[in-house]
Image (cartoon, rainbow, N blue to C red; front, side, top):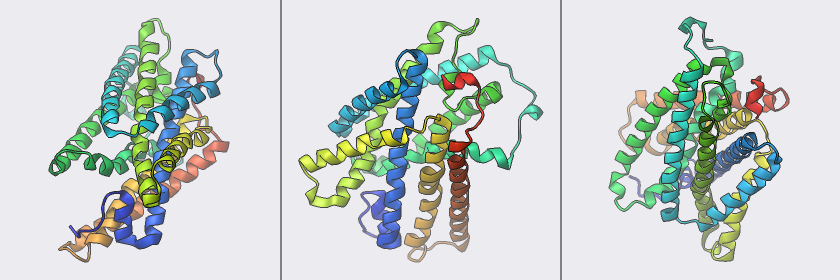
Length: 336
């Protein structure tokens, strides 16, 4: 509406907060996207090790990283959209298998037997909720690749609604059934039982591995795009490929945090919570608040959401860092 550059999340931050604010958004955005890829690497290596434990988990990590880097170097949105389609099929199948296993092996308890809100445990899991919003920074690169960008609002809204409904039903149902047996990496709950066919245990793990490997370059697409645009015209040819390679391999560093639950909470609690809950309302106030007819109530609501988001982020990040030395309790089978 203001006619300012808005090709990336960082461009909008620059319009609202200037160079220092844009630099902070730049750091948080890259942390968020690189962190998501670290979670993917952790998930794949841990899950693959649970299927065939005779190979060290670090070898699985190296193999996964090699495939992911090769796919990322393609750096083509047309290729990535077909890979994302394969990913959707894979994750849908896995969700159905986890729900089948949960229903077949567990029973619902009275609602009053489940734990209510507790400060000492809430922030162990808030990051996993925020984690779902990590991909919001991918919105702009995807929008740019659309043939008809005027339909973006409809596409984004319908996607968010569908995913929200699916995740609420899936997450709520599975947690109510598994309760204290719930693993951070929920496919680790799939294990041989008298009622469970062998294919229900291993096949959905394999499909999730496929889903995350093919999704890896799609997540990195926005990170590579932001870095290359910040480097300007100097980032072409060999230097462009080098940026892509470095961005694709860096997540392996964070993936050394072996606990999937802790890593998700750290990435979601810091990167996703700030980029999804804090930046949008504060950017709205800064960019639009003084130039358009914005009600006082809307400004106060945005300020409240932003401040609460920062508070939640700080608390969750602190819990996640502490958990690196004092891990969350989990059943033994969650470790593969």
